[in-house]
Length: 123
Ligand SMILES: [Zn+2]
Image 1 (cartoon, rainbow, N blue to C red):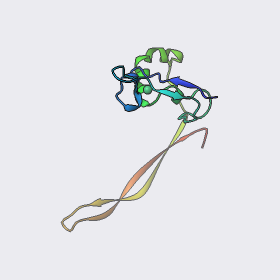
Image 2 (cartoon, protein in one colour):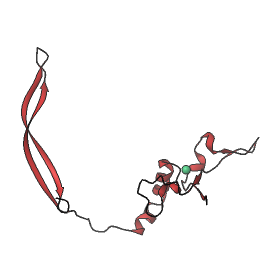
Image 3 (tube, rainbow, N blue to C red):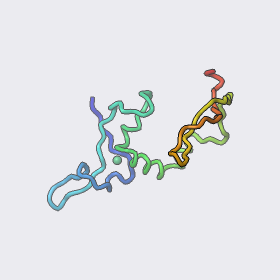
Image 4 (tube, helix red, strand yellow):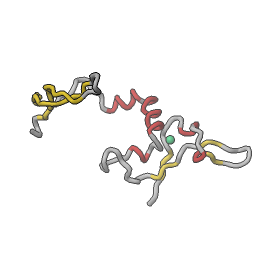
């Protein structure tokens, strides 16, 4: 079963591309893009609805999000920050950088610090 959705972008029908032209003669229009649903081109995995079944591109998605930001936020408002327990490890190591001089230059060693963040669940 093939299902289609009209792109939900608020300005989709105003974007000037040949793919949006419909009609003939003096009755031509720019029409909202028709999207073939369930194509599996998800950026969020395959669980549940696929955002790209409803928007033809990032611009249309962001036009929709911008227009309906408050309504979207109201679905799952965040009133407190979330936190992930971590361990921060600092490790000194020998590195080198290029230093220019009158002969062109060369690499010189220096002490550098590498900072690694490890989540407590995975370490
Ligand atoms: Zn669109």
